[in-house]
Image: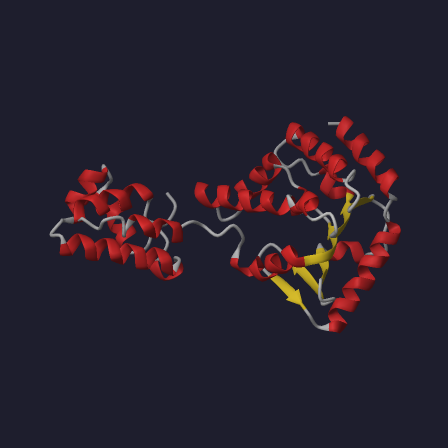
Length: 273
């Protein structure tokens, strides 16, 4: 059985909302057992939510709201309990991505988020370690799909992707999911503001092994670089660091196949599944 998270490790919104449930309940003279019985929940489960160790459910908020005469005040808290669509460490980058006029992406082992299908994203996020709850998985998949809409919604933004062959060969979600994902790459590559290039195995000078990164330029011609790993990420504004990664991107891209060759390569991999 998974260990219950400590309150100090849980979001402040959970702890605040749980405390509000407890205060409303006590003020109305409703026992925790009565609330648990009315909600058809285990006593300890309700206690965990009141102490902020677990996210209060919409069902518990509705039940407590009705029992305690909160007139919708507790139910209104649910909007602030929804999981964030992006991990906290990447939110600043996501805000910049929405405003970027140029995005240059290099991805080594996975399909870039902007190009992911729902089944691929669901399979990938669903295998996060430590595991995520269903609500968080769904919210992050939704957020990722919303990002991908930018390819068509922002025709004046230039999107350039260099994808290592390893990402095409890694069968996230199984063969059928990958086949759909690869066909989605071909479809995205038909957009006039999107370029997709493949870096096959055996090409490159070692720069491509350092991992994925993104270069972006804003409408005010500010330049940033974003580097993300399994447990950490960094958004760079320092000109020297951005320049170094820009040079690395140029070298990687020179080794990649051209756009038409890349499309043929992706189609061949898809047909082999």
